[in-house]
Length: 386
Image (cartoon, rainbow, N blue to C red; front, top):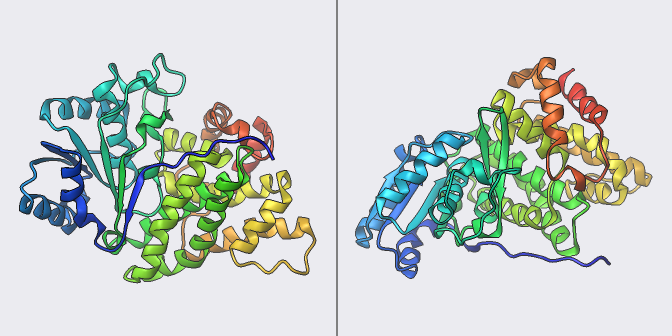
């Protein structure tokens, strides 16, 4: 067995109603003022209303900021970091999906590390050297896993690409995971974020950096998502399915924090940069096509994925069983009705060269289970296009 390290990320407080613990948690940080960051849609919901009421009742001072965009850009992050700096807050609470949480991680980093977030993106001139302002995350989707990870993904609009800042200091202090907050999630969001979580788990499991502990987390997440995503999409009021998806998302994120990701995320980030395809949709769309290419890199693990997703492989050869993994993901994607072709999300063949180049530059491509060349990326895109 190879040597490895395993990092345990944020502290999890899980349960129906867990978000109501925020005032007590904030007081444990001795916070004088909270910067409550969320998105323009969530701020109008009962989720924020309930959180504000609990903070008011506990007499905890806070400032709400909701001017956040999907796929946060360098400009938005830098501007928001300045607003946080002027607010006098000493604790950030992010409520929402991946975009608010990624924004929050970046602005917390910029409170203690000077410069623009652009300086810290992959290939930039600076590295994170100082611990970040403390951050509590309250996810309202079950997919991004940003509440557990050490990275924040930022859009560089000038170069039409998504890049990340990655450092252990960016891991949030606490994740308050309350499945009750996800009951009102639209079917399309439930589907796309669920496929995002599945992608995290599968890529972490087959990564060349995988280890026994990350494998354990990844397989549990794959099996749990396979058993619950269809129900969560079909009946959003099923609190058991919501609970299982909520925790599976965080577990999948723990797996990829340690095991890493692969070609699906490389393509998805490039797609997001050139055509603003949402991260969950991009991952879910590309995942089965990439699996058709990757399964030969680790037949045994892809067979295990097929089994975890409920496929019967008893009478099959190892290779046939491994191929079943991609088929199972195709069927899941069809059942929850996410886009299955690039044309459906505005990607044309004219986008291919930029997507291919962005994928080849993706820093985690080296730990994909198969060594891929530009032609391989093109083949995956063509299969997803035609």
